[in-house]
Length: 397
Image 1 (tube, rainbow, N blue to C red):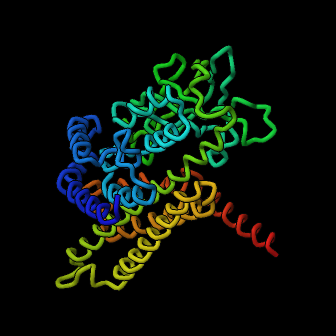
Image 2 (tube, rainbow, N blue to C red):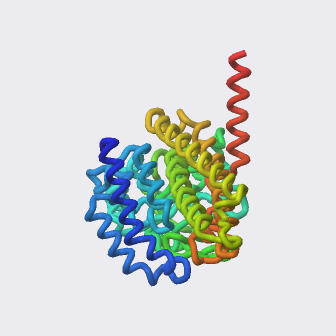
Image 3 (cartoon, rainbow, N blue to C red):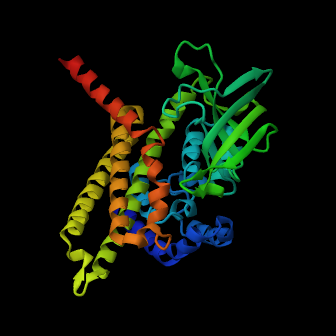
């Protein structure tokens, strides 16, 4: 898609979201997701009819075929509403699972799982994080997949398995080669249909007072003697960690651009409220120097974050995730920090209104606080970046 066509598409998507999606936010914030599903299904059909469906997937599969930088721009637009990515079928974890299956799935796996996932006929989840072990170290897993004949028998306890509620299958990280010399070669990724005996959705975890449902849920799940054929493994045995890292590179670009979309919406809400709210007769919030500083700082931080992420997207597109490891880590902690700052300022400007569900600010403030934790805590990414910089400098000395 040419730059001009992309800009026009983004303008049209902004108009669609403003007219048809943002008005649904009060029902989303105050009601049950299942009650919204009929209307969301209708809107998903409209998105598909307009040619905006699954923007990160190839046209041959029914997607828009956008490059990573172009999808990043579109992801920012969709991030303006909590419903945006779901309506366009590019929500996490489905988007990452689609990319994984596209790059590494067998013909059978693509036919059985990828095609219906791209079509929006099913949803999926990704089961890696475990409650007993730190998610910041994906080479340390307790879940096992033992070979037995032509099958794997999976046993493990996972949580924050996003979107497990209602998903058709999970991609599970489990140890298949416990004796491997390298800790990076011990785990594999295996597709598990969720109607397989031995799988259990224990609960949807309540996060900051909200227990989501459907695609917006975070599941605690168990696998007890869960048997699947070895042909369900994605890639070679022992490649689980490498595939996870490959999946997370573009995924962090997706998340960061979504966060920037949230920042832009919060920024607009903050500015509009500051202009409209009087703090005394004839004096508005917008006239207060502190609020003006927040507005200026937020504008600079959002614009800097966007340029940083788009530059990283270009590098990932050109060199792959491994060729942009530091850049991917930098955007993760930098944009998560900007997101937290902008949301905090927007809530503060709104005062008591900001902590109600009369705007999406409180939802984002709670729901996006984990941005500094998931996909690797910010502290781990900073440590990794600093060590890489110092190692390279030492080697060049």
